[in-house]
Structures are given as C-alpha cells and as structure tokens.
Image (cartoon, rainbow, N blue to C red; front, side, top):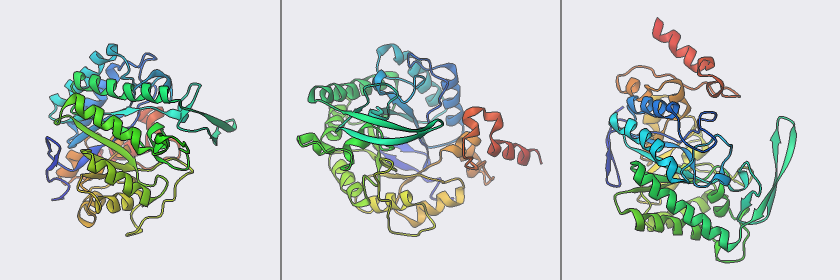
Length: 357
C-alpha cells in the first residue's frame, strides 16, 4: 500500500497518508441548540486514533433554519464554539488534522420556508408515501445573509481550532442547488451558481488567511460531468485547497463518466476532474478495502480516498490497513444498522468474530 500510505501536501498541511474520513452526520446525538456532546468528542477521538490522514467533521449547520433535522450540529452561534473546540482538541491530541463541513440544507431543510435559488418542486418518498417539497426562491437580501452566515461560521471554525472548512456543495443541499442549472433558473447574476460559491470562498480566505484550508464537497455531476469539470476549474482558479467529489442534486444528474466501469461513476468523475485541475481531488463511494483504495490512487490521478461507513464499522481501519490486517467493511445494509445501534451493525459483528478467531 505504498501510495495509500504516502504523504500528501494539502495547503499548509502535510498529511501522513491518503485516507480521509469524510463527513457523516451522527444523527440523534446533538442537542436541539446544535451544541456538541460527549458522544461527538469521543467519536472523533476514536476516528483520529484510527490512523487516517484527515478527518472532515459531519455537516455542521451555518444557521438553525438550514438543518436537515433538529438534532444536527451547529456552528451558527458563538455559544457552540466551546463544544466544537473540545472536538478539535481531542482530534489534534491524537495527531490528526480536522476540518469542519459547513452546511445549509436549502430546499432539503426540515423547516419552512425551504429556501432555494429558484422556485422548485420535487417529490420525495417518505414512509407514509410521496411528499411534495416546494422551494421558496431566495431574495437578494436572503442571499446576502446566507453569505454572511457562511463567513461567520468559518470564523467560528478557526476560533474553535479547526484546520479549515469544507463547503457542502453536493448531495442536493443549498450550494448544490445553486450549481445545478436544472434547479437554479434565476435570471439575475446568481443564475450563475458559481458566483455565490466564489464569494463565500474569497470571503473566508480574506478573513482567515492563506494557511486556513478551504475545500468543497463538489457535485461531479451538476448536472453532468462537463459542468462538474467547469465548476472545478473555476474553483481551482480562485484558490480552493481541495475538491472532495461526490454526487450532486438527486434526480437532476447525468452520471455518465469515462473510464474503467468496475469503478463507481463518481470515482471516474473525480478522476476526470483531477485530470483537468492542479488541485488535490478526493474520491468516494464504496471504497471498503485497502486494495481498492490503493488501486484508485495508482490507476487514476486522484490524490485521496474517502473511507466512510467502513470506519463506522472499524474505527481502526487505517491502522489495520497499514499493518497488513484486513480492516472491517460496511456491508451496505438497506437501512444502516450502525445508526440505529452500533451493536446491531452486521459489519461490526463480522469484524468482532474474525478478531476472536
């Protein structure tokens, strides 16, 4: 695993390996005021002890109305800084850097009005049947407030000790909505969704200095690969530190990408984007084994791999891979059992049985 465990320069940081733990929301563990708990401190400490090169903290909301659920972590108030600082101190104490993902759900938020770049309606399946979701078009004044909220959240992140921030620009959330031309049909300058993203990027950079990392989780298909490549080029030209490539707005994507079809489409999209920019690019989706991670890093130009749910199964994933042991792997349950109760996770049970042999 020579490439997987080689260092990577990311802005002012030198990462010890190419393994990133991506943002995974730990629902049911935050308070309604968005303040972190002891659970978060110990969960992120365990991630850091596991040997990854970088941790990106779960989607952390820049405003209370932008939450996906009422138990999501927040970074919209100075009162949340002490709890967040306990997370960064725990992670840094284990020798690992951490950035926090700044999030606003936009039309996907759990509270009305559901803000969106344009009036947009879609159907979402729920346990009780299809639900129609309607987005309310943002005014220019509301866009100004959102921009300011992102900048204030980044300032709090730096005060709390994070090494940087990742803007959440995919998975159907607010910045993804701006970047997807099928969702954003505005006729003013913000009809170019990159305008708001670049204003946020440049504002964070100006207020926090060159050593504070600013990356983005970017939709590779927003709504198609060519658009994803153009977005990546714009961001690279304006000094983004890394591109963490994932899926865009659900139902508004063409997921065609060139390359080896044994790799997931978004991994191929990340490779195509990296071929066009001189910025570190992360790949994600179904990377559960060290062998697959190494293959992606050697056979494509991407720089880092996201190991997500398999780290929930095995927090020591990176250390086990480095020592030549077989780490635990997510078995992709239809409904994640770890999130219900970690003791019910089939992947974790399988790992425990193997360790007892």
